[in-house]
Image (tube, rainbow, N blue to C red; front, top):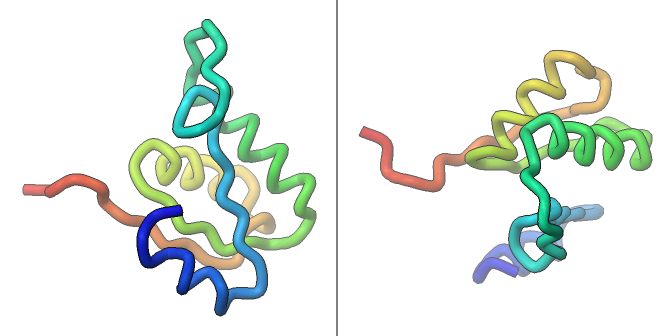
Length: 88
């Protein structure tokens, strides 16, 4: 977990930090994934949770979450979007 995030997470009711396939610690199957693949993965996670969620996201995932929020507004209760690189 990112340094400092674990302390924050302890004070929250529940934190789920999915690792999208092909990124991070997850398997890296030999396949070219598209944003639609990630959209489907996150949409399925939201369906399984079955309750509006607060999302903290940056970069590619933030864009996917915005797209999902437009199409499925009841799935979300709040958003926090970050920028991972310096923006000029």
